[in-house]
Image (tube, rainbow, N blue to C red):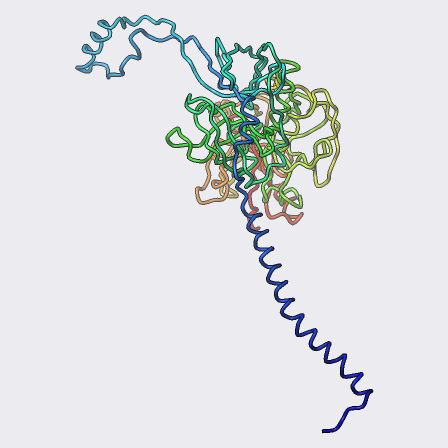
Length: 503
């Protein structure tokens, strides 16, 4: 065997050590990777495990601020209870009459007391309490029961039927425990929430669930509900919906249920709506919402195409009665695309934004009109006192030479004295009467019916067949695939976009 030189040994020695080091490091590296994987799996499991160990600490913290509400109302009822309903001439008619007479039910009405139960929560140490309007509506007496058993009489500070919110006030000898409103806009779908109240008259009760959905609308103009699967039943109305930090993010108001009990679909009015209402009720005893003074509808994609809008957004003005918008120059056919510097997505968003704006404030309103934007300055009125000024109906005039025409699946006629009388139309507005609609046509699918009155086409007034045909020609020359029609039915205006027929 040949011996290696000192140089060779010097070179090969460290190389051999390096190889051995790498061989030793490989198992260690594998061990570290394994440990890292375990740590990551544990972190993921902990993160996924959103359910807290207990709601007890939170419940103990917030329970003293939640109250049960009992109302008493005087109602008129007949003695002996409700009268049975039997058909006139039935053989049972005499029997039930004798039964009522024996039990004092001689048909005379008498007053009686009726009680209702609900929930609420304290929002200030000096005794302001929030609940639902329907809990205390028409009540003669309101009694509040606190978590410690104390009972106090409450007075109504103010109510808002539009959001179903009421503000009460009690006088206590010592400062009351209270809770604060949170920011409902930060509530995320899937987050845990806790509902508290007096379900079915059972007393203080806690239930937990998650935020199932946000921005739900039920039937009101200012609806902004948080949907939750936390158990909400009758008696929970007016109670708070808490986030996990103990802030109120909603007022439990309604449930969707076929049997009257909780099936996991409950609705709480968002706290950001409630806060504004409560502030106004506390200051004025009533709400004071901004009023623009327009009738509006959502913009559909075909309407947007007919007007040259890039996307279906904004609020289409269908009518402008006397009021702030008319004074500022807003016209029927305008599309409101921006209000007070905020883009308008749809009618619901515009109504809420206008209502939340200070009465008397002058705002910039940007509208889309005749293919371009125009900005107007509008000084808002007050909705509560101005709504009555909106006329219930619009009237139309009579053309001299009536003509008829079939187009776009509709039979149209210029106004005649007979049609004016049949439709109960007065002087004031011109237009074309829809006398028939093909049920297979798109006009029928979009709700056009016989008796409707077309007053505008292509955002221009039309009173004759010739004027309508002219606007159709203009739309075709502009490359439009459809034309926008303003249709009135019993005075209510609505825009409809109909496809243009090939010429």
